Amino acid sequence: MTKTLLAVDGNSLLHRSFHALAGSQLRTRDGQATWAVKGALSQILGAVDRVAADAVVIGFDDAAGNVRKVAHPHYKAHRTEKPADLVTQLSLAVDVFWSAGLHVVIPDGLEADDVLASAAATATAAGWHTVVCTSDRDAFALVDETTSVLRIINGGVEASPVLTPERLRILLGIDAGQYRQYAAMRGDASDNLTGIRGIGEKTGVALLNAFGSVEAAFWDVDTNGGARVAEVLGKACVKKLADPDGRAAFWENVELMTMRTDLDLEMDLAAGSGPGLLPVDPQGLHDALARVEFHSLQWLAARVLAARTDDADAPGAVVARAPEPARVPVAVTAAAVDVEDDAEDDLTLF
Image (cartoon, rainbow, N blue to C red; front, side):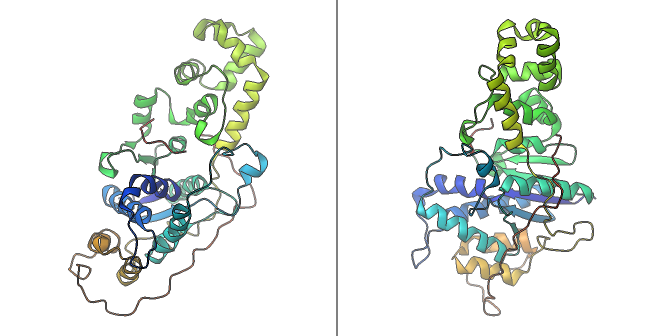
């Protein structure tokens, strides 16, 4: 039976939980904010249970630097400073998840999306299936025969769709391999990226279905006066596709939206060894959750992540030994050769 790797967008889940559960103001007895961490962990547990994951890797953005922002200063430049409680919980989540036995990866200068793409590539090479867990539409570009996306929307994990190539085609009207170009044409306001002015979702879908790729439409405009584009999409579209600023924005978006697939995640899935494999150590899991007072999640976490079916983690259970120090996540770097895949979060499916 094919094994499943759950690749989680840590930033996406933490941001959603921070805003959705802010009213609870859940904190430890010493005042440490924990509501976003608990909410994200609850979603991870639900996802592991739903897809019967055999391993878990959680990606986070590198808060110290971003190579995309360095190369393109306008990228995400409009975003306001994160609230202090969100910043502290992002850091706390890394510690809690790693200490619990889950594999946390923070790529040097890169983003959680790069971890997701690299996880999918790693799993495919090992003969595994990948389920990407995120609320971000960018992950749709990763969907293929061995990778699906659990798109977290309002209603939680159980209400969220698992997108396969067939389902994505039904929902969007394009193939998964076309999604990056579709998004690049449309632009992404949450990342401060403009697209080709006047090319929206409907026109983008029609163009890709008629031509297969944006390059083919550009070629028609450049070599055929846009006759085919005019026939299919109207004369006004020829002008839009000929606009040099629009083309520049499109290609810049393609560059920014292309995720890295070459990160060494230090997971040997083929051999069934390395970090992130389930079940995790039950004692380490118990200790990690106890430190942040997530007592209500102990039994579920023990069942889902540690394969425990007894009452060892029920409320009031005696801990066998003192908590061990938290492990430190290892930063990863990209391979020497860049590899491009050919192929702020919103709360709705699209």
